[in-house]
Image (tube, rainbow, N blue to C red; front, side, top):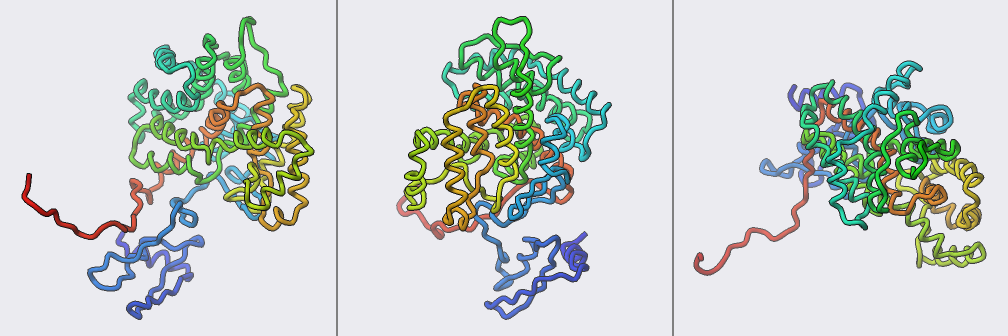
Length: 438
């Protein structure tokens, strides 16, 4: 199909953007499909025959759709988050994390039999090759666990060379299962290595979240029994992080995956993106802020400094949500359940007072600054005993099914090619070197 035929087909809906180029006086009708114009349609708008054609300039891709996706729907103005059409509020209450992972990957929630088979399949692949342990042992004792996770994810590609057969659906499914199954093992091993503790192996009799807690905390007891409240809380937190549309790490997964590399390498790239403090480290920044405030009576003074522009209010506001983050509402209820088990974290009182004052203040209301998922997640993780360095690792465990679903969707999309953004060159024009050649 030619470019002109494609354009004619897209224009059949009747919706067009009429553009007049002031440089030439020529007019163009650009088809509008699903509320967007095709960037390549701009190329026909030229100042001369030698002109390359018009580009769109969009730093950080704030208003550019790079794909069509049927996985996650977000309406930031209304505070809506849905996986495959299901509201996050329903999934957090009625589903397990593994059922949500199945939903993201397959488009439908599993039946009871499918759920059992899926759980057994994941449990069967939770062990990692013994040489992976040797690989992790090679890191310095104070290596960041997220750095270890990124590296070990990439290393897995060398253990499964068949993963390169990305067009083989059977092989593809094997790698998806392995990644979801093994990422908690790698995460727990990274923690145990940093603590100088022997590795605790997976327990197939436990749930996905329970098994991770087992590998984190098991000591001398014959069998670790996770607290059911904390086990459930972790499962809900993983659900809330399972996917979030085309964010930085998901975009990295898709872009790297577009080269047709194996999913382990693509997942390592996504995890590396999540490693950044602006992405996976936001809940750590919340804890630092609460520690800096120190006590409830100091909250008003801190709010005053935020309003003056001296400080930022961490955990408030979101690039997407302009009303409220639906995940924050769910996670606040989880926090109450966790603190009944662990005891009340003093930081919670500071957080609640901070939230109360901010939500009643006209400054924060007009700027649409509401608590996001990071505002409470760090407090919960800390109460459960996770060190701050593990926060982005926990995020990566939850996000793995979403990354893989996006990777699968991108690979099956006939409109996709290897990712190759354009640039606007602003460097020097042609220059010549003076003097004799050396």
